[in-house]
Image: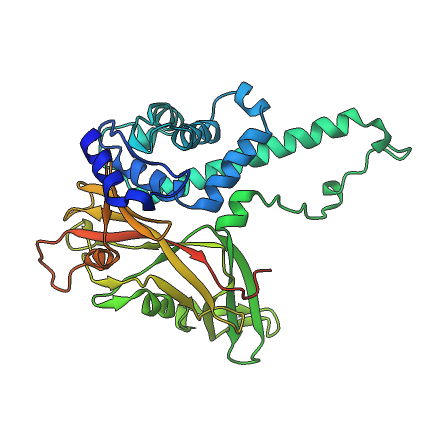
Length: 369
C-alpha cells in the first residue's frame, strides 16, 4: 500500500483535503463485506463527527465494557488521528468484537454487506438506548425528591406510551414511512406510520432508482382473500394500499434487492440488472409537496456472479473527489467511472461489479422536521 498510498497523494497533490485521511482496511479472511460498509460510514461525515463527538464527551464509555460502538469509535479515531495521510489500518478489534457478538459473522464464508449494515446500525441504537436509560435511572435514584406521598410517578404504569429515545444514529438515518389504506366502500383512509433506517427496493432490468421508488410507492388493490378489515364498515372490504415517505431521512440508504430466491432453482440468484443511480436524486414519492433532494456520497458494490461468493468494494465521494476502496487498496477514480457500476443490460455479461447499497445525503432546504 506504501506505493499505492503515495500514488494517491501524488494524484491529489495540493488538492489533498486538509485534515482528511484515506486509509485502506486489512481483510481478515472474507471481511470485505465489513470493510466496504465501514468506509461508506466513515465518509458519512455527520455520522463520523457525531460518533467521535459522542465518544469524546462520554469518556466513561472507554472504561465500560467493550462493545461495537466503542470499537467503531476507536477505529474511526485511529484513522482520523493518523500522522500519515494514507496507509492501511487493521480493524482487528472491531472484527473480533463483531464475530464474538454475532455468530452469523463468525464463519469465513461470504457475508451480506446489507445484513451487516442493518445489524450494526440497530446495535449502535441499542447501545445508545441502554446507556441513556442507565444514566436516567442513576439520576432518578440520586434525586429522592421524585418520590411523592402517593408513591413514585410512573408514566408507564398508566399505559401512557413512553416516548422512544431519538439517538444521533436516528437523526442521521431514520425516516418515516406511512402506509395508507383506503376502503373502497366508505373511502376512509387509514394511515399507519413506521420508521426505517434504510429502504430495500425491488429492481427490474434497465430501470432507475426513480422508477424503483415509484414502484415502491405504487397503489396495490386488496381484494379476494386479501381484503382489508375496515373499522368504519366493521367488515372486510376491498381497499387500495400504498406506501409513501412521510419524513425523508437526512442520510438515505437504499438497498437494491439484487439477490432473489428462485423457486425453480431452490436457491438465491444474483440479479445483475442495470439500475441507474443518479449522483443527484429527487425524492418525489413523499408526503411533503416539495421534493427532497439528495447527493450520492458512497456506493457499496458487490463483485461476482452469485450470492454465496464474490467480493465487496466501495466508492466514496470525499471533498468532491471520488475514491475506490478495495480492502487495503485506495485509489482515485473519475466521477464518470461511477456509471460502470449500474449493472448489466444483458443477462450474461463479463461485468459483475454492481451497485448494491447506495448512500445519499440530503442537500435541499426542504422541510426536515
